[in-house]
Amino acid sequence: MGAAEVTLVTYHYVRPLAGSRFPELKALDLFAFERQLDYLAGCYRFVATDEVIAAYRGEGELPPNAVLLTFDDGYADHFRYVMPRFLDRGISGAFFVTATAALDRQLMDVNRIQFMLASSSDIKALIAEVEAGIEAARDEFALKTLAEYRAELMIPNRFDGPDVAYVKRLLQSALPAALRGRLAARLFRRFVTADEAGFVEELYMGPAELRAMQANGMHIGLHSNHHVWLDTMSRQEQAAEIEGSKRICAALGQPETGFSFCAPYGRYNADTLDLLGGAGCAFAVTTRSAVAKLTDPPFEVPRLDTNEVPEP
Image (cartoon, rainbow, N blue to C red; front, side):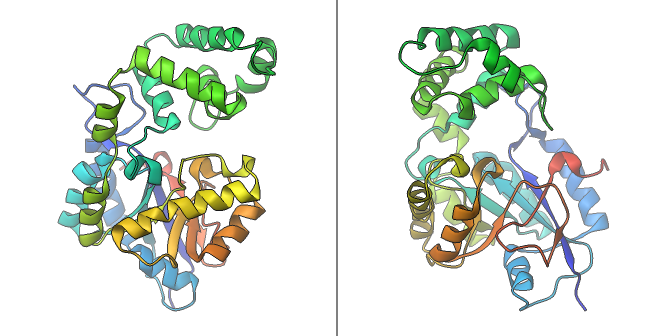
């Protein structure tokens, strides 16, 4: 009888950090990634996404200690650094790609914020810049007081201290969308670069890289159209996001049904799950931290973060 569990591990940035342009970026250093692969190879059996999907359907079995490595956001890191090491080891991973980044070459606000934080040496000064932008826009938007925002949002989370979490929450979801985008774009230009187009080309895989990944046995899944918080959107808006993300399928010559999906930020609701089923999704992963069981709903499969994998 096959195993009833499978460990999925989540990765984002994987790159050499020492001597890089952004040594403070919250990324997994390439050397640490290679050590983690060594550890996993000694304790687990690597499986492919199609094997996991088949097991959830009851159409196949997984070996004991099965592990699937997953990568969010479609970074060029995955093409430059991850795929060559996977090919050397005979591993196939799952890569979830945002359509506007890969196809339209648009910089996602989540990345503006991450690189802004990595480029700013003084988080208190950055908070002051963000709060000044809030105050300047107070007559334009119905905004809370700074004291209210601080009380609600300046709270540590699983990965960030209170100050970093505060900036992320303000610019990712708490402020009105128009103001978030305006502040993130201005601060990115100030702290990171004014050459956004060039930055995008360095940061994300495009269609050519995705086709090469697919041709080499990697699984390409969908990560929404615009990398948004789906649970804050209407059902109609969510449907448009899911449909827009399927442009990746068309670009890669994949069927538009049977795709896999990863909700940005791990945020979704009952409408999301219903819409995924209607759109022909086969499998979806979450950010819930747990070893996945084959009894888990196939659209709510949990994953461990790379930081939760034991040190080799």
